[in-house]
Length: 61
Image (cartoon, rainbow, N blue to C red; front, side):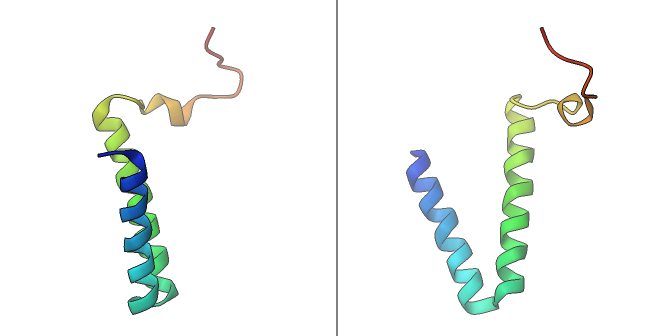
């Protein structure tokens, strides 16, 4: 499945949530989608927990 199709499905889900549930439902679906995206990146191995807690002085070389 291409990223365009995934983006279209996510947009449609947000649209339905906004239309039927109002702005609060729209924000809830968007927040849960963002959390799911980050968890998926952790599972795939693209992110590590240390990426969020690294200090500014600690630079990769």
